[in-house]
Every structure is written in C-alpha cells, then in structure tokens.
Image 1 (cartoon, rainbow, N blue to C red):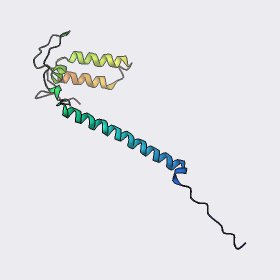
Image 2 (image 1 turned 180 degrees about the horizontal axis):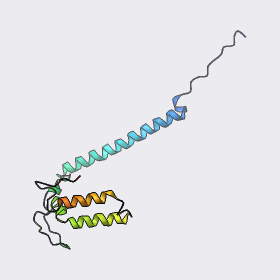
Image 3 (image 1 turned 180 degrees about the vertical axis):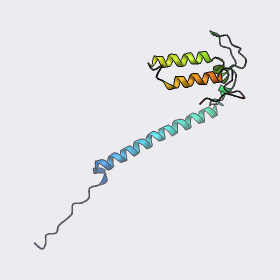
Image 4 (image 1 turned 90 degrees about the vertical axis):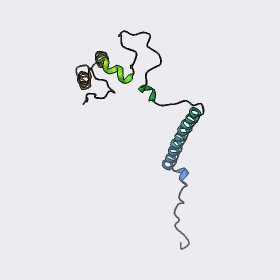
Length: 137
C-alpha cells in the first residue's frame, strides 16, 4: 500500500474546454470581420484617390449645376440648396412631419411633432444656414 501514489488527473488542454474554445473562436471571428472591413475601407480610399474622385458631403453647401424640371412650388433656382430650401417652405416641412407622424398612428401623442412645429414657426422667414438662424430647442 505504500506504493500507491494518489495522482491528480492531468489538466486537459484548453482546446478541449468548450468555454475557452468558444471565446477563442469569437475573438478570431471579430478579428476577421474587422480585417475585412479595414481591407474594404482601404481599398475604397486608394481607388478613389487614384481616380481623383472626391468623397464627402461638401456638395451640400453648393448650388446644383442643373435645375429641377418638375416642381409644384415655384421658387428661384439661384441660391437653392439643402440649407436654403427647407426653411423657405415651412408648410411643406410641417406637412411631411404631420403625415409621417399620422402614418405611425401617434400624431397627437408625439411630443416631437409639437417641437418641430414650434421650430418651424421660429425659423419661418430665416435661412437655416444664414447669419441669424432662430434657435430651436
């Protein structure tokens, strides 16, 4: 009996433990997704620079080189842009907000509709990107 030695079971390798294996596979999957995203962004940037194509939203600050062919509301083409058009037509913006809220079934219960209407009343006659826009809170 003196020769009987109590042996501890050998520790299993980490690959046999499902918890550790799951974490390793998740980390590898996230790394693969990030690498794919980085490759796509890098490839896009390189190709845009090679072809001299500007990207971004700077075009919103400039007037379009063409007029709108069909329009229900007459407006001057000069100076029309995203920042110049919306505040000039507060009724159109209010209508879109109310129709959208009514379509969701919450026209009366939506506090955002009242805030948007108040903002439109304040900004009526002012340009959104002009020198003195009315604050909307």
